[in-house]
Amino acid sequence: MSDKLSLIFKKALTSKIFKNREILRPDYIPDELPHRDEQITKLAEILAPALRGYRPSNVFIYGKPGTGKTAVTKYVLRRLVSEAININSIVRDIYVNCRDRCTNYSVLEGICLGLGKEVPFTGLSIPELFRRTLLALESIEGLAILILDEVDSLIKKSGDDILYQLTRTNTNLRKSKLSIIGITNDLKFMEYLDSRIRSGLGEEEILFPPYNAMELENILSKRALSAFYEGVLSSSVIPLCAALAARDYGDCRRALDLLRISGEIAERENSPIVEEKHVRMAQIESEHDKVVEGIATLPLHTKLVLIAIYLIEKSKKNVTITTGEVYNVYKNLCKKISFDFVTQRRVSDLINELDTLGLINSKLISMGRYGRTKIIKLAVEERSLKEALKDDVRLQSIISQLTDL
DNA sequence: CCTCCACAGGAAGCGCAGGAGT
DNA sequence: ACTCCTGCGCTTCCTGTGGAGG
Image (cartoon, rainbow, N blue to C red; front, side, top):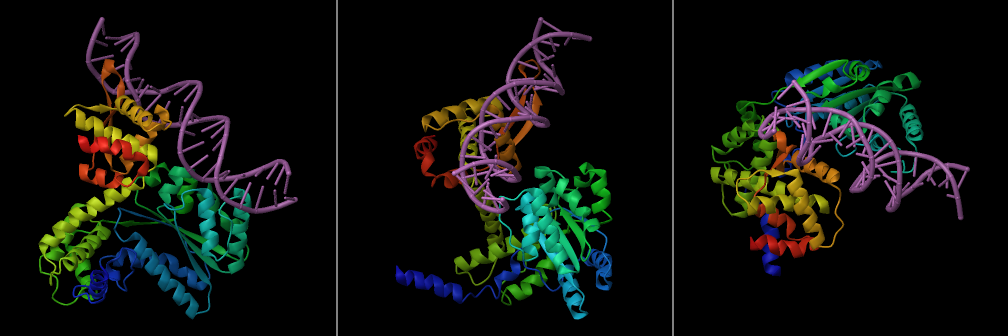
């Protein structure tokens, strides 16, 4: 065993494929961002007044996932901050991802942390926390640029109150100034924003269009140059990764993932080069992994609802599944493992959550006389489901039932 | 044209966890 | 020790609704 392990470790140390695989990670920010010149220039022009001590306009950035919004923003900010240091002017950047921090409390906590001020992660009232945030801002005696990434999830979960207050902070600041950059994947987000916030946050707007296949190819080639050893990529690999990702709305993150996983698969297979078949395998594997991970981290009742849908789909072919049916089967599952079941209202929410996660597809339909309901379809493969559930001890007794079918 | 099914989904509120301040 | 704060998962109660069948 120890020989086997040392072999694995040794192999990892002496990769013949990757020169530096970190370069392919989605959070890696390269020195050069191809095909985003227009956006970089525009953002830089908006933020440039910061260097002369003025407060730049708030910016609203929108575009589909993987179009370089976060990378461009961080890139420009990094340059701006280092430029500011050179000329002794104080510019601080604060990055808060609102998907991880989607409550008012947590966003303010994030801002404080970004400014180096520790606050308790619960216990304070919002006004008190806001007061501390102001103090933290005031203490830098310069300009703070706040990046609120995926800001739509904050609004959807906790409303626009904090955002409104933040856009108005400058009236309460004496020694410091605050500019806000809001980033969102949701193109319709601006429409359902309150008009006072829209005008406050969207003083300037920048749109990030999706990359096309050619552009993706170009980006991948540049990164591959420093990520892979020379000659290990067969010529069709990059075009294929680019084409597959371009089909997924020009998502660059996806393209980079595919390329990285392809390399990892080739490495595991001891193949000296990365070939087209590795990309195909990477595509299947990354999808599968994502789904398994997604299901495995689901709360118990959500898992049970998913199992219920699976069981119904298995037992009767090509018949529509409704919320009511799912609820009944779910209730029986709960009884079987002696767990309390939640209400139908709650299950309705859980079904929506599964839908947003892409694990099921649901559609609201009306059956006239026979009511109005959702029709539900499983969107994951059987093997992914089984693999994701197999380690949950609470579900053991019903999992044997799954495999019988 | 009206009815009425089988839900969707909004609003309010509860109990708990995990904390702060006094 | 006590009160007060927020977030979270959940319940209870509620109003709203597309369209087949009468």
